[in-house]
Amino acid sequence: MSNCKYIFVTGGVTSSLGKGIISASLAKLLQTRGHRVTIQKLDPYINVDPGTLNPYEHGECYVTEDGAETDLDLGHYERFLNTFTSQANNVTTGRIYQTVINNERKGVYLGKTVQVVPHITDEIKKNISKLGETGDYDIVITELGGTVGDIESLPFVEAVRQFIWEKPNTDCIVIHLTLVPYLAAAGELKTKPTQHSVKMLLEYGVQPDVLVCRTEHHLNQELRNKIAKFCNVKPNAVIESIDVDTIYDVPLIMQKEKLDIVVLKKLKLSTKENPNLDKWKEFLLRYKHPKNEVNIALVGKYVELPDAYKSITEAFIHAGASNECKVHVDFIHSELVSDKKADYILGKYDGVLVAPGFGSRGIDGKVAAIKYVRENNIPFFGICLGMQCAVIEYARNVLKLKNAYSAEMSPKAKYKVIDLMEDQKKIVNMGGTMRLGAYDCHLEKKSLAAKAYGRTKISERHRHRFEFNDRFKKDFEENGMRITGINPDTQLAEVVEVENHPYFVGVQYHPELKSTVENPHPLFVSFVKAAMHHKG
Image 1 (cartoon, rainbow, N blue to C red):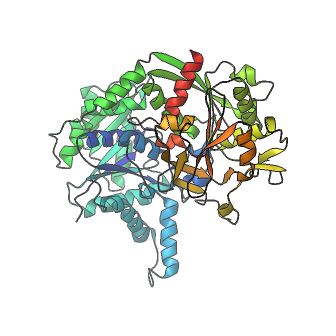
Image 2 (spheres, rainbow, N blue to C red):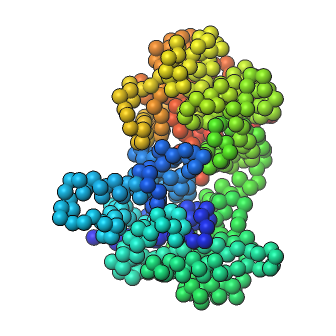
């Protein structure tokens, strides 16, 4: 029998308060006290996963080691905890309903009317329990997406109510994240939105044990007592979450507020072990007191929403701190870049990263950006589509294959230097069918990539359908673009580099997904170092 404890994190008043960051920060504090912790996200949308969602609508799609396309909050979980998540860490309404409907078709509920209660709620509870029953964790934190009161999140709240009711009193607690807004006209903080939010949660049968209050101004004891009294929690369970400079400050703020101690006492767990956050504080010190700075241009298609490249921007923070360097990232829309404008737009940067993406929009701008940095010896880093655009640019301008393109954008192109993977050609369904998750890669010993990693055998996460066309490998290598990383099983090109260039690396995989506070990704570290050298 599992002795796992469960913490549920709900949100009220408004979305985007930072449930994921609070969950990750609490998990970090509990982890440094010696507990084995994981975090799970319950998402109320009906998509089976975010794999087919527009980045403008939902931010980046985060891919786990086992190939699950998940919510970007799982990236925060991994970056804070330095441990992998999996398919079981992200559950959507779509997946729940898909399972229940498939069961109904198989006759699992034969004779029963299939309903939200108990069938949907039972399936949700089963997914909540899944991680706890593995025996791998002492504590499972479950974050409920959306805001209390949303129609789509009601089955999740009801499932949580039932789950808590079925467990012993000290096995589960609920943390409710809410907002205490400051009204400038009145010159005071207002607690009424928090009271209403808790009241709504109570109407659904769930009593929060801890309130985490997002605020722009400090909560005095009088306000905390007021919130505690009207929301039926103890004053020490009213936790202030004041706005900070960086999300990486939040674990220290939560430690100062004693959130971990309050939680452990309510779960009847020992508070004797003090959290050791020395590495975390060292990272923050390097991040906040850099000795150098560089300017990086991120050329992409979804730059209006920075969350579309969340893992990349966080990887730059990790790599910057590792190099004691402040990395200023400017988002450049690829549709604005052309051969004529490239110098004006990109000439002032110390390095250029061409970002991942899908579809033909903005491709010409990416190709123009790569041509400019290649010819002007500016450090370049291409990820996924960014690497493919580097191959297209090189084919057109060095190999003189004027009609070179990707089959994704031009299926009838004369020179398809990027083509659809063989095992993708008969696939009809779009969701969850790309090459996803961790795959091995072997690097050439003397390559830039191997120097960065400090080894030749690596494993990285993928999310793509198209690949470098091996028919052209000899032409590229004879003309200065080397394939320096390949998958040992499929021989797929994973890394390309240009000879006689200070730093030109394109990778088919997504290195940003494995960068964490404690382990900055080596390619980002080496790219920032190259940018510093270029500037210096």
